[in-house]
Every structure is written in C-alpha cells, then in structure tokens.
Length: 71
Ligand SMILES: [Zn+2]
Image (cartoon, rainbow, N blue to C red; front, side, top):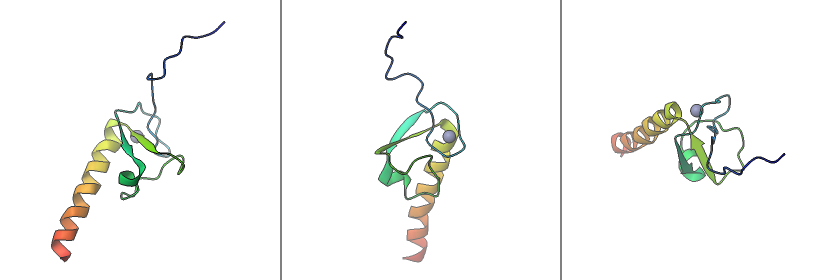
C-alpha cells in the first residue's frame, strides 16, 4: 500500500523542541542572526511556525534597532 505524495503537506517548525506546523520558511542565514536554536544546523531553508516567526521578526527588528542605537 503506498500513500500519495504530498510534498507540501505538514512541514514542521525547525526550531528545537517545537512541533508546530510551519507557517513560513526563511533562508538559514536570516535565521542564524537570531538566537533561535534549530533541530538541525544543516538546512538551507528553515521552517518556522507562527510563534517562532513572531520571535524571528522581533529579533531581526531588535538587531536593526540596536545598530541604530550603537551607531
Ligand atoms: Zn516553532
């Protein structure tokens, strides 16, 4: 018995300890700038759930703000 292939189905969040369904994916280089720790460091694209996407956005925004402050 073989299952139909659903390559787009149910990608999971790649953050360590998180088992939520992924909402979006990002290039690893963007995610490396944050302190989110991933299940695997060997990814090209990192899937993030809604919660971790928020965290990601917060941290990338904070980076820019810090740059401005310390400039
Ligand atoms: Zn997550």
